[in-house]
Amino acid sequence: MVTLAIAPPEVAPDIERRSRLIPRYRVLLHNDDVNEMGYVVRALQKSVPTLSREEAEAIMLEAHEEGVATVIVCPLELAELYQDRLRTFKLTSTIEQE
Image 1 (cartoon, rainbow, N blue to C red):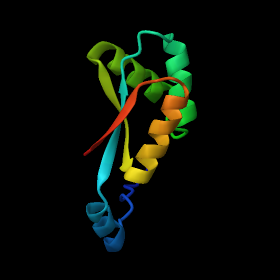
Image 2 (cartoon, rainbow, N blue to C red):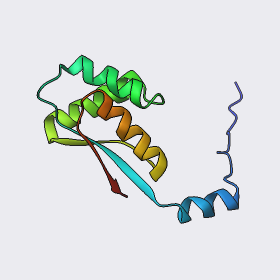
Image 3 (cartoon, rainbow, N blue to C red):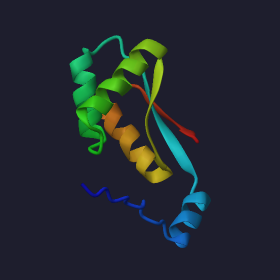
Image 4 (cartoon, rainbow, N blue to C red):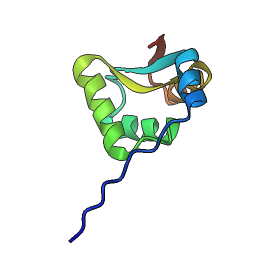
């Protein structure tokens, strides 16, 4: 049996440079004592479509146990979009710079 090592893809220098220049923001989910846990998980997945069910569950549990959890880290415009989406589900969400 032959094992092949796969090298990670290289990041283009301009993309790496841009990622340092564009400030990133954390979208935070705050604990929710009103809605049931399943509702929060579904709201997370609908608000941030890249989240798997397992990731959404982990975020919900962290917010429940710690009071706040990071949903995603991204540029400001996307962070504002995700925050607005979470708020349409009546969830408390804030943004802070990374």
